[in-house]
Every structure is written in structure tokens, then in C-alpha cells.
Length: 357
Image 1 (cartoon, rainbow, N blue to C red):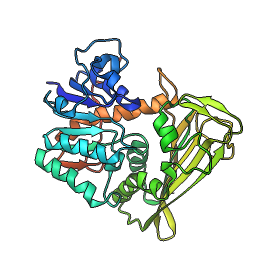
Image 2 (cartoon, rainbow, N blue to C red; image 1 turned 30 degrees about the vertical axis):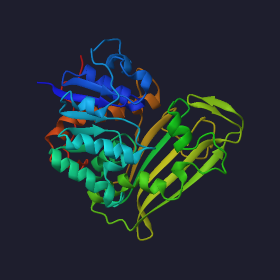
Image 3 (cartoon, rainbow, N blue to C red; image 1 turned 120 degrees about the vertical axis):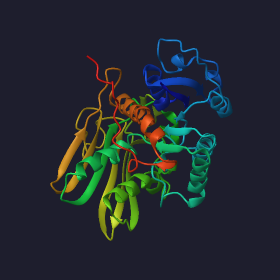
Image 4 (cartoon, rainbow, N blue to C red; image 1 turned 180 degrees about the vertical axis):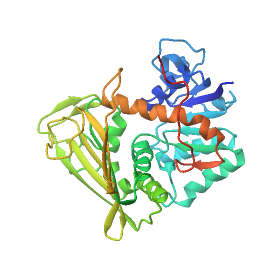
């Protein structure tokens, strides 16, 4: 019998996750919830970019969505700029006895020692009330800095450092809120965007660092951060909008989990809006972008992950991967114990029946 799943959010990740739910025989879509008024009443197939009609039309109310009696809700609403509201949404769903799997709020991937208890306790209380579970995942933060490094370190005799990197050209990424409001692209370099405010990087990727530390049995003493920025040499256009001359056009940052004065877990991002910018910064393993996991130990590894897609470029492929990870995790989350679940709690997520001839 198919698992009954409802869906929230039809942005970049949500649209692809919704398509995965519709096309999979493992799931029965019960409803879709959106926040944009123009999307209300549209068919789920249309919102997913599919040339099919599902008969499921979008609503703008979580209560109306829960009335469809799903076993699970896929939550892909914006979480970066509305963390408190996203947590409250998840609590409502969990308290109603419905499991949650999604891309947001990202800090719930592993919130301990990252979020104050006042944000964690309501989620755990709601999950206990509803006998329900929550699992948040993605690419980075997500499987590029939990699943993949855990798989590699599981073969090592000793580990001295784990480094996870995203190296990507974001010119084709059309998420304007993330690009401009969160990361600050196109803004003057004397303006500090949300992501680069003191401590925000350490919070945003702190969950990934703390989860790796927990899985590796490491006690992190502190988390440090720094960044470099590079201005546009002239004005140019990207998918999300126009980058003026002098506006931020390349960003590199690093977050380090420190043991004493030694960086043991490092997450690094190198983001350009043009491939010719900052040639001395790390370069991707394929044109456009790649992910990299480096283990220093015995043995040591350097593994490059090069996502590609028949339907888009490296940015599209990475978003497909995030959506796939979410959708494929649903059965294991339903089988998990109540509460906030992490990769340390779940079995290896696979997808039977995905192989095509």
C-alpha cells in the first residue's frame, strides 16, 4: 500500500521533491500547501513542472493539508529567513501525529549544541505528543558533509581531519532570496549580508560539524569561521538578477570545528558567479561545480562528486539530489523512533525499484 504523503513548498527543492512524490509508486500524494497566492488552486502536477494532472490542487493552509490524513509531510518551505516560523510549522505537523521529512529548517539536521534548548524542546515535545519523527536533510548542509564523509572515515584506521567543500558557479541558480538577501551577492562589499554576520556561518553549518563530531566521537572545543569576498569587475547578469560593478561576485568561506588549536572538521564553500573570477581559489572537478570530501588520515582520501543531470546543469543536478534524498528517506523516517532523527539514527537510505532498463 502506498505511503500517504502531503507536501509543503514548491520552490527550487520543493518543486523537484513534489515531482518525485507524484512519479513514485511508493507514495500517494494527498495534498499540497503553498505560500504564494498565485499558486493556490493549481494542480500539483503543474506545480511540479510535470505534464500531468493529479486532481490535487494547492491550498494555503497547513490545517487543510492535515485534513487529508497523510502519514508524512515533506516540508520544503523557506527556512533560511524564517527559522522560527518553520520550526513552528513542523511542531504543528508533528503534534498532529504526522512525520516530517524535508529540507528545512536546516538547523534541525543536528540542533544540539547549535540551537538553544528553547527551540529544540518544543520540537521534541510535539514529536512525543504525536508519536512522530522529523528528519531534515539536503546536499550541503546535507549528505555531502554527513553521509559521504562517514562512509569514507568508516574505512580509516586513523583520522586527523575531515574537510568537505562545495566549489560552484551559482550564475544559473535562480533563488533570489538566498543569493541576494542571505549571501549578499550583488551588494556593496561594505554591506555585511545575513550569512556573514558574526557567528551566522558557525550556526548555519554548526549542525553539520556537530553531527560529524558526534559520529566520529570527537569533542569540539570551538567553531571558528572566516570569509573572503571579491567584487564584480563590471556589471553582468545572472539567473537571479543583475550584479552591478563592485557588487559581490565571488565568496569563499570556511567553518572549522576545532580541537584545541587544530581544525579537525572543516566545511569550505567557494562560490563564484563567473568561472573566470578568483582563479587562485579552489577549482571544481568539473566545469560549473562539484563537491569534495578530503580525509587526512590512514588511509587518506580526496573524493570529488560531480553531479550532472539530463534536465539541467550542475546546480539543477545538486537540487535534484537534495530532493531525491528527502523523498527516498520517507519510509525509514516513518519506521524510526519519535523525535528529531539524524543520519546517525537512520539506516542507509536506498530506493528499491529505481533501476530502469
